[in-house]
Length: 261
Image 1 (cartoon, rainbow, N blue to C red):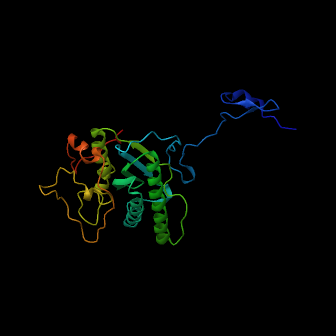
Image 2 (image 1 turned 90 degrees about the vertical axis):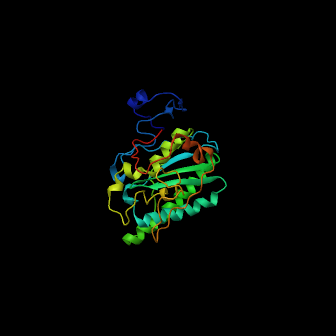
Image 3 (image 1 turned 135 degrees about the horizontal axis):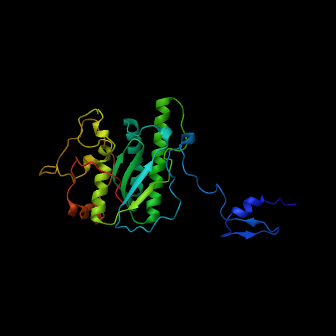
């Protein structure tokens, strides 16, 4: 004989999208505690709301995308030489999707990675980010294992990536500044570095040609010996090539505020 649910539960549950079974009990619909939980900081989880698994909006090939990938807390800081090399290796994987997905700008912060990418459509973005994220996780896990002597497997980037479509020159200009100068936002520019950098060495700032401080030949910094930069594509969309420049070049000393919308 089928067991009935407690009467209190039956009274509290909303009946939207629900129906009765053959025993007259309500099935389906909302239930207390159901659904994807918010991260609460327990068991190594970050105190952030998980990205909702909703269908991403339509993406046109002419629109760049700002992507944020957050690392699982037990990974530790991403701003190390070893992790930098691991993420650089992952950018090689992204080159396989060159016809439909490009990483144009990238910066590595302590707990997250910022990217500005181009993709032909929503599915190309998903495939490109999936390939990059899987490769980055594999290389970072190998790096952690080599450092600690204990094999690490599993999650590296805890949340589903956050993506914002960029549609205007002002939005693109502010986002480039936010991504490439993000180290100033987090105070990383005040930490001691191996070389006296004025731009973030854990980013693609070295190959960016839109700095105000470049001279008439377009040069600003010399690459230090032994430094292998992140591998990215030159932009193809009008917004990333030309459009944002109509709002003014970017200074290396700009300190971004909140993330651009």
